[in-house]
Image 1 (cartoon, rainbow, N blue to C red):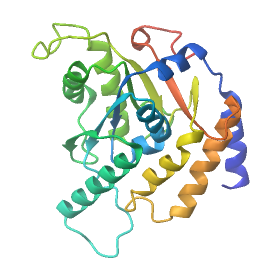
Image 2 (image 1 turned 90 degrees about the horizontal axis):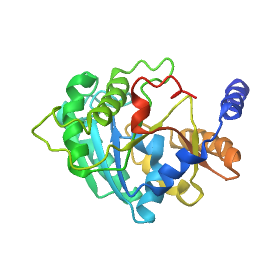
Image 3 (image 1 turned 45 degrees about the horizontal axis):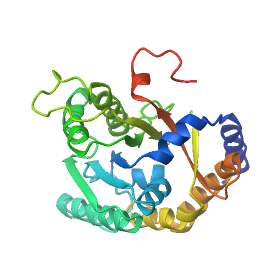
Image 4 (image 1 turned 30 degrees about the horizontal axis):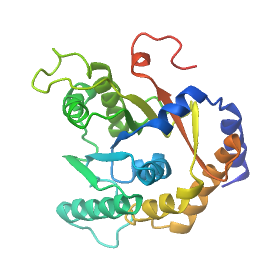
Length: 260
């Protein structure tokens, strides 16, 4: 990273105010649903945490919302879309295997065309009510300057699905059978939890680098993510860590204090 980026990273790390109650929610989660806008996003956002959760015996399900077909930027020759979709699915399966995640679901929306939250939330409500997670992990839709609609729509749809999870007249075809889960938003500018990933940093990096179509410069990506993870680790006295904004279900509606 450049000296300017290092300075920004230090300001980011210095702004983190860990919340022990929210950390305990992530530590105690036994049934975790991870919702990724594209193949690779959950490995970047939470690969270490998810690998650690599998290792301690938690159930982990990964839902991949889009097929990732538009994300390939450096190919020697143009490939048919069905080949790109197949390649990205194989990369995701390999990455999930490294993290120990065996339960995967591909929603197969076209990359860059993930539907708005009101539509996508219907699919996710069906998943949450069936899988019954106590924690859902996804990307933060409120990340400043986030311009990818797939990320914004996925994050907002997850939050809407959690908000409506326990309302029996919303999507009556899928019965309510559990309490609503908490939410952990990764790739966030306002983390309140920093999770150590010392034991799983190698799995995290290996899973990220499975996505060869996305990261042709493996060395550069490895160095950058390790650098960020190392800086965050200092917050909690760890060699490496991942940041999250964790919210209880009741904080997803008319809560003026949820940001703090």
